[in-house]
Image (cartoon, rainbow, N blue to C red; front, side, top):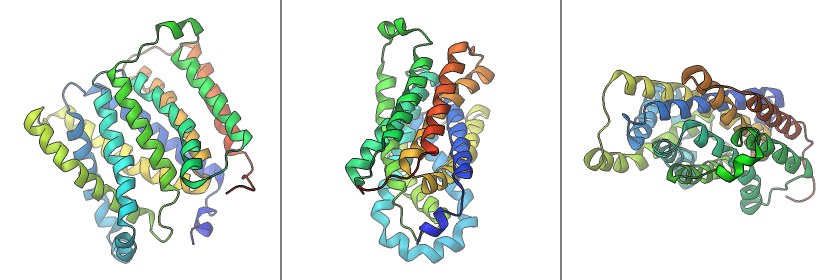
Length: 307
């Protein structure tokens, strides 16, 4: 049922869509870090999904109404998608940048493309080709160049704080989402999928948000908080998820997941533009290696044999 639709988009178009989603998420780290002192993590996450849902629902309503039997039939798997990919991932991300830099948090996303093939194999016995492994190695090498600032001696001084550890929880959550979204109900329109998962994410986050408002800090209403919410709703939620889900549908989780290596690359570029962080030679080398790894993976032939 989904095979005809998944081949109507070319791999090049899918690659472009996944690059757009990575750029949007690179910006998400910059925004999260920029407003971390003012905007609480569960508050940003909750309002992000509630408002994205409110914007999308009027456009998607005819499809949601048509797909309602499918949504009801598959509500458990949709709830799992929403929990990992929306509620847990973003709340952990926004919490992590209270304690670590945007660049550190974004670089840890580079672990996702390594976890994704492993989880694909564990959950679905999806084969991992030698070429995919090579692509992962080249991309991870590029990320390592950026993390170590081009100097292997930096390994001795690398330190992980609690923000980095919280980000590892987010990384696991996102890897699960990437693997599971490929198996989404085939008859479900992409807009129906988004509406259902956004609704579940909002429901999951409501009690956390109410607790945070009562015992930690409430969500402020200010120019900064409104601009942050506007960015994460329009770009990091609506645009990024539409592009990501479609790209994964076409390329599959193992190849598509590699595009997450572009998130730290875009984050570094955006940190340079908006936060005044300097871009250096090692950034260029690392980003080039990441791109080579992605090209290796996306031009690979589909694996045969084991399924």
